[in-house]
Amino acid sequence: MTDLELFARLIQCEAGGEGDNGMRAVASVVMNRVRTRVGEYGRYNTIPAVIYQEGQFNCARTTLGGRQNLQNIYNMNPTQQHYDIAQWAIGGGRLANLWQALWFFNPYSTVCRNFFPSEVGYFQIRIGDHCFYNPTDAYAQT
Image 1 (cartoon, one colour):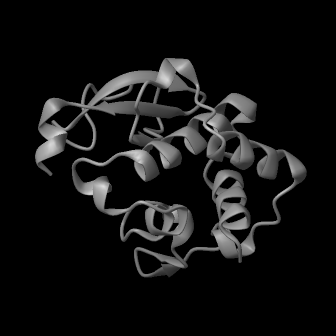
Image 2: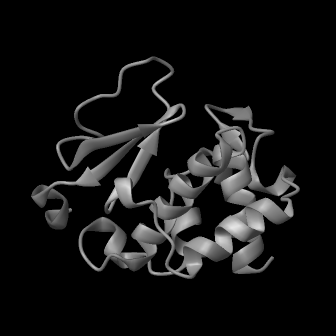
């Protein structure tokens, strides 16, 4: 699987139901992680390294909580839209309102936490069902 196909599959799996901006936001987070040179993610400088980093993307796992996870990148069939968004992000495209977001999650509620995953990320914006978080100064020490 090429990096482009892997990325398109992740976009579809993580945000396929979130519309164009939701998928672009998730793609932006992946590329922000690829491009950062500080903190924990500074050690993961390729698309596969970011996607397969342990514990980061549920869609990169075939099991979750000891159960089979059928919503994973291996079961995705990305469309041209997913490939186009992946190409856009690889080419430097970013949603301006995300800044340098390194994290996102679906809180399954209308409220986003102020910090995620801990004090190293602060809430930036909600897009669709996902909350997006930028790094605090403390992140560089991770």
